Length: 213
Ligand code: SAH
Image 1 (tube, rainbow, N blue to C red):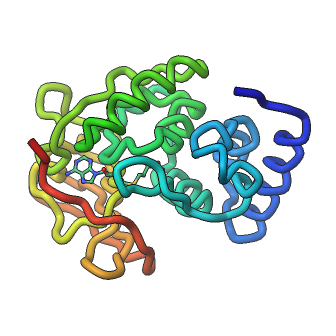
Image 2 (cartoon, helix red, strand yellow; image 1 turned 120 degrees about the vertical axis):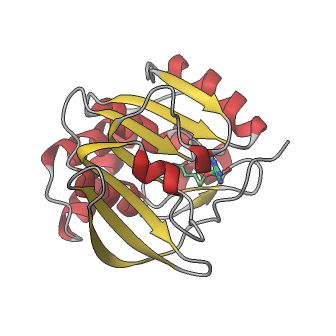
Image 3 (tube, rainbow, N blue to C red; image 1 turned 90 degrees about the horizontal axis):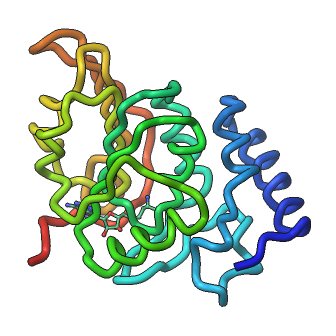
């Protein structure tokens, strides 16, 4: 578990690449510069950790591309103390980005192996979510709702109603919707019943699945 000046240099390059690709939020770029992504993936991929690539993690899942993580975080305009729900903890890298931005993060993962691994790993490198939950993201987290922001990091076949209803007025849900490829879709809650919808472009995620027992 080493983080060296070489890793730091590679992270700076990655942040510059992401800036070239349209990431303008300096807090997001600072988080990318700080977080040791190479520790979130298998050591056999370490030399590629700071390229803008997705990698396999456990349980046939992937750590998202840095651009995707940065883009989703930027679209959500994360503010300090925002109460944020993440669906799909996975490796915990997106969780760490949200924590670097001083959000209060609840994150749900449906794969027990990943939940256990990431629950152990994140605090070990100093990242403390409010709570990591083993469960089904389709239900959201009614006991903590409403949320300022909800981020889904798996491809959802449809928009789960509970996630919309668990947003504060003014809150934002960012969710990739679709089967083979997904349309990144932003919902802004305007009132109890009204939501503004923005379609932001195509992405590719692993599927959001119902809870495994
Ligand atoms: N943010 C993660 C992305 C991991 S990929 C990272 O960058 O590492 C998407 C994750 O969503 C996988 O870990 C997958 O197991 C999880 N997932 C899929 N369906 C889910 C559901 N219904 N509820 C919660 N998590 C889910």
